[in-house]
Figure 1: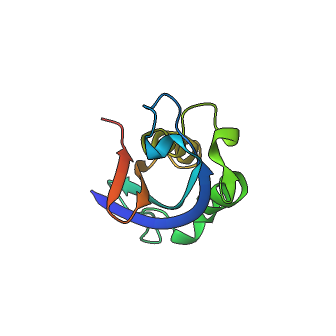
Figure 2: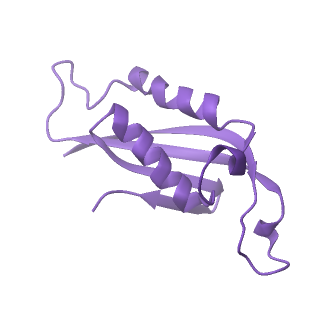
Figure 3: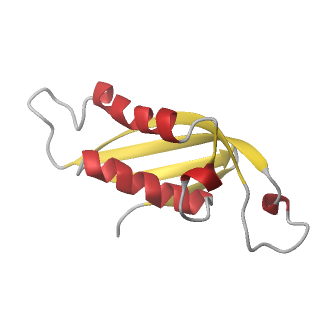
Length: 118
């Protein structure tokens, strides 16, 4: 199995509802998100790629146009946790490439949420 991955970033604000009083994530705050998309294939294309990295600009366009410098609560119809952002972006990427195997979302340098189909 061949796998490639690429990281992207965007900045956005959010707040999470349903948390106990005083929880820092219940307040309006922002992150410099790091997103990693992973694609896999049993065989390489005729040019030797899983997917040409240049083709991943489509995913970057989604992040830039729909999420960068936005308030995610206004953009998404669900609680914008890292886990929910991961499954959302996985679905968006899967519409473009069937070879998507994983999307990871980081809000900080020490935390990641990941979605992959089982």
